Length: 129
Image (tube, rainbow, N blue to C red; front, side, top):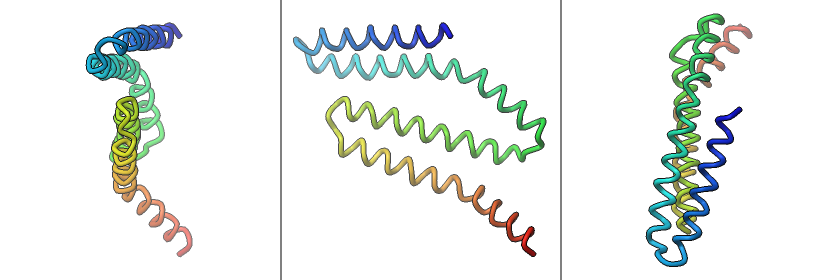
């Protein structure tokens, strides 16, 4: 629970710093935003270790194919990274670039999900036959 307060605190400090610097040096505000965003991302990724361990335990107990688990993690990662990068572009008032990043992320997620979809279709075909 304390982790969220550290993330919120860091985010608020970064935001206040950006607002103060933006008045005098707007180019530095963009740099602070990017570096601050990376710092927050690192803080969040450190929290993911516990979630990853729990998910691995679930995979081991259920006998789910580990390659499907890896694909699922890639899909989740692409979604979060694309949204993060898109939000950075929105912060820099580059909305059209942000939209392209999100579109690219969605297409990559679609491509990554094809083996899962194929497995579901094969399973349904076996059940019907």
